[in-house]
Image (cartoon, rainbow, N blue to C red):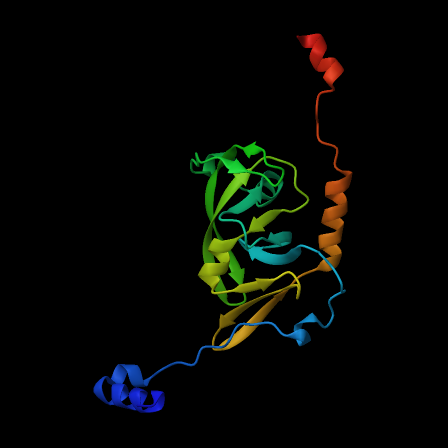
Length: 194
């Protein structure tokens, strides 16, 4: 029996199933690379609207399991530390160090007409990014991201919408990381204290 015939038979039995919506296909092609500087190994860095503010230098990291907001942005959004809820799970930074969070807060993130409430873990460590958006946001939005194509694609009102990455900003962030000198005690000074 053909698939089309099965669909017709099922539709005759259950009228709700007859109204099947066609979902847009999320994917990337060579055309999506137009305008991208190739070859590259740039991070995917975008701008988003968070709590009504346009926020730049947002890194999209599809490997992370939590959204991270750095303290400078948190304060820049006019939020107070007493607004945070406790968050007691340890986080591991890119360099393998354990980071203790300041807490957690739920904030609206707007993507086109969609507004999604996202839980951010607030940390007070150096980063050239203002925040890291991760799998929870991507999954809630139904989005897919591609560092190669420097885009995030998501379904919206029966269409595929895009958020474009900014390679120039991604490269500026990389340079900032390379130039950053962490505050580390010299070994000679540490030995004197012993």
